[in-house]
Length: 57
Image 1 (tube, rainbow, N blue to C red):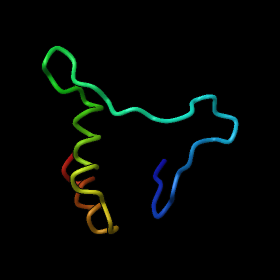
Image 2: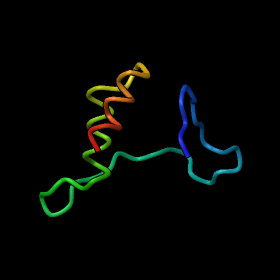
Image 3: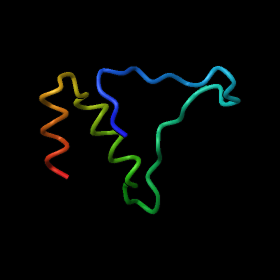
């Protein structure tokens, strides 16, 4: 499934009050922390940037 130009929100019936920043474990970044940092540092703003990101993986 692919979402484009979509703002995804938390479900109204979610019991989680807020999200947390992924933490590094054993002095090594986890996949979640790497992905979080990539998005935090350089958010994808255009469809062209998204397309280029998909081609990298």
